Length: 189
Image (cartoon, rainbow, N blue to C red):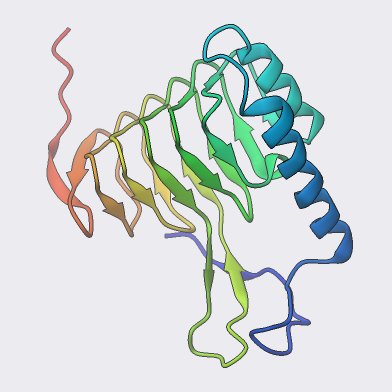
């Protein structure tokens, strides 16, 4: 697990937003664009259009990843997605901070990637964020949950429905709640 940090140091209580007015406007503008121009596009024919919209809102995109129209990205300006990565149907990237998705990553349907949490040891419940990095050729099974500040190593497999609370080593298969080591991944091509 990498270090988490506070989103804002000015948060006085649990009812004060950790977002600036400028950030709130940007978030709502993206929500409107997502609703009107992203979500309604057909699955295959408008992938480049969806990538264009993400880029317009600051996403760093290299090559040609595939993002389903039903996928939801909270803050494109905090997203880096690389060639041949796939963000599956109804998957959600709740990226309050940086999320890096490397080449040829498959994020299956209904996955939830969240890099925000709250410091429960303080009464103001300040928002904490951390970088999530998903390295090359990772497969994340359906309905998996990836928590803040984690790195998923190359060629790792996250089993369906898993809750990943710790970093995942390269070339391993993990599963369960919390996700635990199952076996080494061996490709027999």
